[in-house]
Image (cartoon, rainbow, N blue to C red; front, side):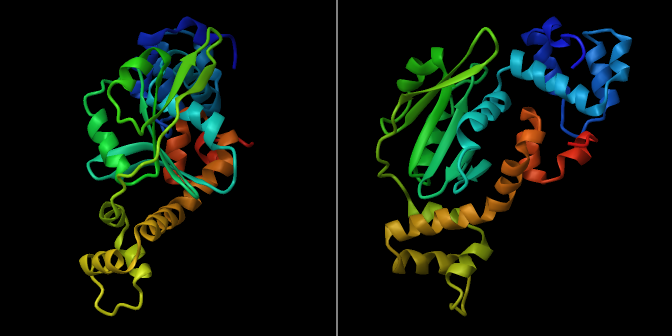
Length: 273
């Protein structure tokens, strides 16, 4: 990166740049947006990768929102290990979980930054406890006490803080407790028709309702929990494998986009790695 352009920015400017950034935006649009705050002809000499790298640095350093917290948690906790699958934004009932990790256990991570309010937190956690073995909230160090007073006792807490050198530090503040609230009916309704059909493939009278009722009738609670984890893990395994193999060539603010789209980063960044 030429010069220390990011040193000229602050939270408010980074917030505005975040509103205009997207992974496939052209470098010319990104340059013009930057020129509103940094008027330099040098920007025109930057390549697509360089400009997006500047945005990535500014957003990580000055705008700790859900995207940046998520990316740093992935870097430090979830890219390690080869047996699990991590999923972005899995829809659960009326909620959408920020991150979840599935292997032998299913673990939900709900991120609450200092930019968020906690009005929906109780309802979100209630949804997640119907599905996942373990549930954690990720919040800033200064919000740990407030979060602790709002969450069920079974919920674990990770805190984060940002050092003066802009490094993200995570800490396990509270261990999770055993979850006795798993609802097999909700788990099965999270599966799609193809997944349900494969479970009851010998059933000639397949319908979604009949399949769910048959599984509930013939399988134990633990068996259904395992069925849920196996199918969700399989559904997203290729996307996670792609991201895990390529994340070192992907900017942190773009992790979720590449998880969804699985396109070679060199095509999007027009850069040979």
